[in-house]
Amino acid sequence: MPNFAPLKRPTRSLEEALDWLTKNGCQITRGTGRTLITCGQCTAEIEADKESATRIAAFPALLIGGERAELVDRGYQKFFKTRKVEVAATAESLTALHTFSELLKEALGYTSLYNEGLGSVSGSYRYDRVVNRDLSEDARPPRPWQK
Image 1 (tube, rainbow, N blue to C red):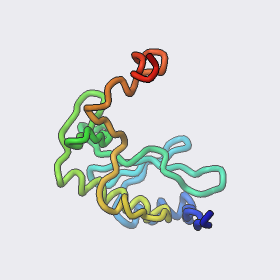
Image 2 (cartoon, rainbow, N blue to C red; image 1 turned 180 degrees about the horizontal axis):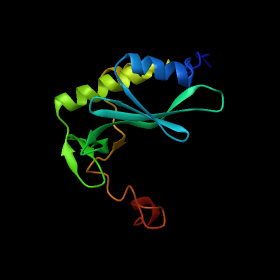
Image 3 (cartoon, rainbow, N blue to C red; image 1 turned 90 degrees about the vertical axis):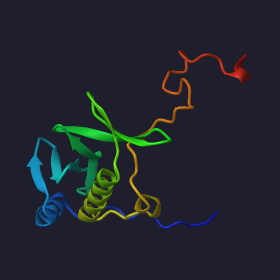
């Protein structure tokens, strides 16, 4: 069995990360436990974990109408979805989200992975050909091999 190196743990404390983000043009809003980071039209939440490292608590998202819009991949196109509205993703919005995600990883001392460097990573993947995927095991109709 090959011996793989462990993934790099975040190296910056919450205060160091907040200072770095502020110097790079982000707005910081402190809450109870979590801290909201906003840069341009993108937002995310970070918090300190038990080992005094800083972690991403809420996946980076785009702000649409003052509300967080999660990136959803439907297989044929990406969308930004809030509780009220769903908007098709544009090249500009995907670039902004990708740039913000990389900025946030740099601030926290995370390792930037190759597949994430290729483009935006969606918060959820909702392909239209997957039928009854979101139903619980009890609510799904029997599969062919279960009949």
